[in-house]
Amino acid sequence: MEAHDSPLADPAEIRRAMEYYADRGWTDGLPVVPVTESYLAEFLATTSRDPDEVLMPMPQLNRQCTVRLAAINAALAGCRPDYFPVVLAAWESLTREEYATRGIWQSTTGTAPLLIVNGPVRKRIGLNSQGNVFGSGFRANATIGRAIRLGAINALGLRPHQLDQATQGTPAKYTACIAENEEESPWPPLHAQFGLDPSDSAVTAMIIRSCIHIEARHTTVPEQLALDITGTISRTGALIHETISALVVLSPEHARLFSRAGWGQADLSEFIYTRAVHSRAELAAVGKDAIARQTRWRLPADHPDAVPDQAQASGTPDVVRVLNSAGAVLVVVAGANNAGVSAVIETFGPRGGPPAVVRVADPDMKQSERSGNTT
Amino acid sequence: MPAVSICTDSFLLPAQAMARAYGFPGFEFATVPHPIASLDTEQIRARARGVLPGVLRILGLES
Image (cartoon, rainbow over all chains, first blue to last red; front, side, top):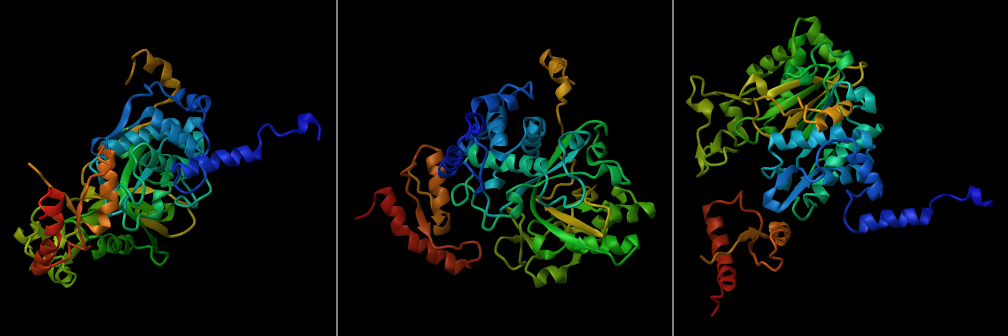
């Protein structure tokens, strides 16, 4: 072999580096990309933020995730440097959402962060919003979600069997990042529902318990489809607290079914809110007809800690709502426009207020931000 | 005030990880068998009786 045909890197050395990362416990179980100072600098060059700025404090663990640590873990995860502004917005959204910093990532519940990306950045970095949107095959989706998981492991120390006490966890813990299919949605995108301009790019992070598949090819009646979705949201296994919350991810076909009938996202949320109910007897049958005095988790009415739920004190004590408001159900559109398949994301907590929508800093704005002209 | 942390045996590894995070790698926990949340009053009392010698030992009160 001529000298100029020699590989620039020794494959054995590459394997050795990968084994080193694995041996140190710096991975999620899959191989990671080795990170050098010069490669790290490429990530940090995409933002005007101070590398030492704290993105997520975790004082109960004596840890924090800084911009630098977020960049290292994004690089480890396989992100390209130009994905990093999205990763930064994701960390900021998770911190604003507060469930992570309040300790849910240590909980036996075993949640994962789901990232929903909106706006022009989706196209710019190749985020998938269409077919197989929750599945594999797209580098930006796969690695941006993974960047958060590796940050949780390496920056915050949340390793399973140690500070991550998840009983079972969820496959979403490897990565969970989708883009909204704005082009095939009949409705305003998520970030525009909450005050941003559609031309902005944004990340909305939500701590989730699970992702449930709904296959409904059988109907063109909006009320029937809405009730089918409602039945999944109100299942008693999900009804842990007094009330719960959900994100409905409609396929374009399902979204258009509602839209053709004149329904907007708010109409679907309102319908679900009013129909997601259980009778007192249904809840008693599964031992969830009261709530705990302190935690407000559901438990049997004869439990020593039991107090009545809010429905009990209402004019209709035998009708127990699963949701605290229509705002506890958010609606976005993602997936291919090829079938009546949608998903219910079981989001953590009661919610009801606006989600943590965070604008992705525009790389072209970097110079003006440096000079203090921030928006 | 002297205090002893009690957890179920299922939480001993995370508890020890938490102690390391705070700079007390040798911190001792008194443990009770898992579970707790689903027990009735008498079963909880039995857990309390069972863990008491461990609590006293960590407090340095063993005879």
